[in-house]
Length: 276
Image (cartoon, rainbow, N blue to C red; front, side, top):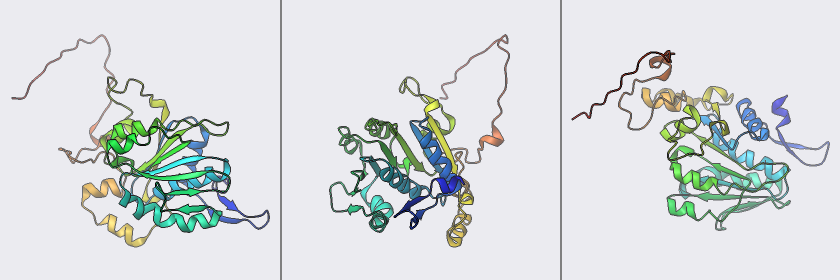
């Protein structure tokens, strides 16, 4: 029932054409966006869970339902943008009678009701500064973990168009690996001296794995299962305990961490060793 409520149809009544039926985990993400409770939403956690396609259709949904909706769909580099979203958007735009202009700078998809999806890339901090004068309802960073943390913070400042139907937000998708993403969305612990205004209540994570996709490519599933244990843990199983530069690769939070309740009246002893 919830999937059908979020399905995307076009055409006259009685002759509607269904273009998109979200997967159950995608429904959870759509409901999180619609709740307007969160400024920062992260979807994903493993490969094969439908992350990139979800971001595109999330953009289509709001561009079709809210007149003049402004959306930025962004990857770290332009070649990544070409190989992922741009290769599909031309055909998908035809379904909605939208105009897709890949040759524009930036590439853009324009809807008849004045809504647009701008396609962008952000290879360095200087590129991020180019967006500072722009304004959007929704910003969609795909493969969020490939961006630098401060880069995303700057881009987020452009999510500032308010309207009665929608409060501006950032919805990203990524695989595990980036420690700053884990800190903000999974552990919800950041450097308060550097990010004094961080509010963990504004961050929401929806985990989507290959097993949550009922239409997997058997060949791709076999590829993931054949990876080395560390890469498989991140890409196949969505483990956030594996990251680049990790010293103890066998570490798993569920196995090696315990929370101890220490009575406040017990004495504390602190020490430091410089390690030389």
